[in-house]
Amino acid sequence: MERLQKFMARCGVASRRQAEKMIIAGRVSVNSRVVLEPGHKIDPENDQVLVDGRHIRPEAEKVYILLHKPEGYVTTVHDPQGRPTVLDLVNRAPQLQWIRLFPVGRLDYNTTGLLLLTNDGGLAYALTHPRYQVEKTYEVLVKGVPSSDALTALRKGILLEDGLTAPAKVDIFAFKAGNAILRLVIHEGRKRQVRRMCQAIGHPVLALQRIALGPLKLGCLEPGAFRRLSGEELRLLKSIESQIVKKGEADAAGKER
Image 1 (tube, rainbow, N blue to C red):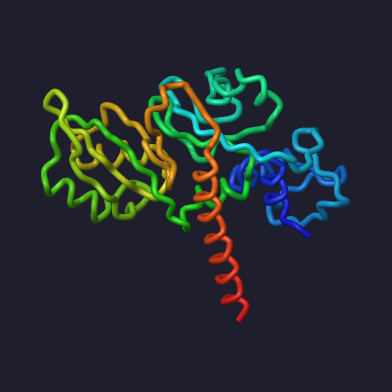
Image 2: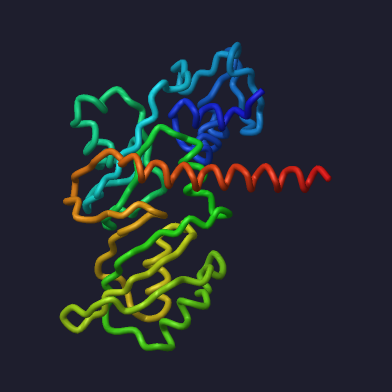
């Protein structure tokens, strides 16, 4: 037996967290019955699962795409407002048109940089779940130059409306027209988190780019361009996923005892 959201992720529908939201929204049925509980268990070999009326099954090929997201694109599969999505960029490639990719995590509409797209729900879950603390690195152009006290506040954690942030790694990387460019590393994924943190210390963000996700580096990839992960990059990501799976199994065993 397998949890429904895990099966959906394995089929490349969405990450586990997004799959849970789809289930709660009533978009998923098992053997012609709508299921509203994300923890519902199914028999992957015999149960028929439909999402939005479409029968789903595991993808035979797992695909991993590193995209340099430009400004003006939303990090979703579909946008109700009709704005261009990151999938519009990769679906131009004929070999990717029929593969159900989804973004791993999110970047704001005006944020640029590294975004991973895949149909591997297990890996997406490992990279985005906050408990696993996979680091995300940003170059942040802020207004003005933060003082040492302001940088220390970021390193200790900033109290936002949704709680205290985890400590960040941050340094001034360069200067541009009287403003500072910060190199900032966090492992959380709250909505507009970097922008809110910088606003809280009195230095609003002028430009924001993600340059790394775990072991993945943006490098010199041009905005709007994308490529498949190298074998070494995939090996490093799978190593992270393996460690996380082992940790989860150990935690579960501890609870049972």
